[in-house]
Length: 253
Image 1 (tube, one colour):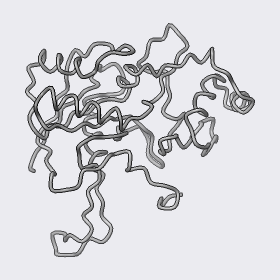
Image 2: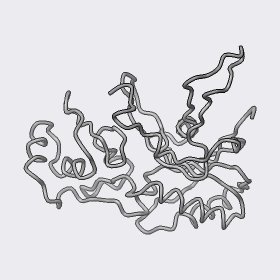
Image 3: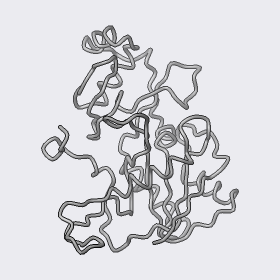
């Protein structure tokens, strides 16, 4: 594999609850004159999946706990937003510097459990949660698109996250289907013949990050990216949700 090609699909419509993403993607591929081939990877921003799954919450009309009220006063944030974060989280990691960092129910560490107000209609006081089961969403999209296109494609669902000790956000793989998300090079040799002992490559995150350059974080309106040329079929297929490391195995906790 000497090169890969990234293509952003243009003119994706604004996604509404219960929209059929498979049909929307198929129509857009046709309108963009893009031909899908075996081994192509379709990278999709989680936000349009959450919108189609109607993961909106009206934070003005949610039952707020005493814990959420106290945190709201301390953090100076809407109590309904705090309650949403608590509902989507296993535990609070930190509230330092006015930022609520939690362990999401899916296992990863993030600010506000990945909940925000960006790129959703602003006329109502709504927030958008992450997909309920991003692995299920990825599998359904992979199966549906592969069948319709008669091609063996892969899916990566992405989200932007902050990183400890690094400025800025970056796209990571939230979940995936039919792709080698984590490649284990342990036991192989480097260019000098040295045996690699503990080398695992988070391929899904690397592809998600590359796609993020075209997706953008503001008004780019490019939530779907096609990656061509990636082929690591000799490695085991695994879901990107499993890139999340538990407490016992995490070197930084």
